[in-house]
Length: 177
Image 1 (cartoon, rainbow, N blue to C red):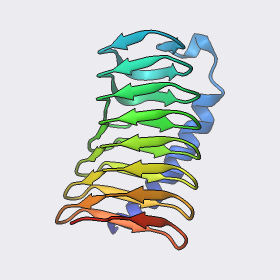
Image 2: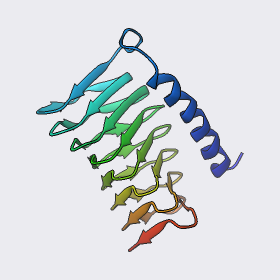
Image 3: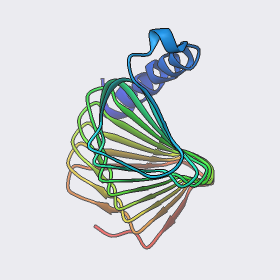
């Protein structure tokens, strides 16, 4: 199976996972934290959800296994590490700075979300959805950046063996090698 087929299968599985976890109640979620103000540091989310919004900030969070970090509505993260089935969702009004996505990890940047300075390692995926913005992303060997129609990727650097899958209608600016 080639990388793009693997990516499609991964997104399908991810869609099922998100539908399943979004309907889970608090009793089934081992980790649940909502941060609307202040700063949380060095939390580990290996299942459940860390929700960052308003003036909340999360620093150096590790997201893995079935953990999800959701950043939206004025929330900000810095130096998050996403791997092994972990997901970082950057949504409307959310900003993620310096996220590292390793093997099996996924960063999605939805409409109105911004990712700055992400590093996408081998078998990690960054998915820029319609009207999401990625700036200064570095895609390493076997890492994947997918940019949907109307998704915006600015100043992306693709290293040898890295993959940028730019769909028709995607917006690529100041791309480097």
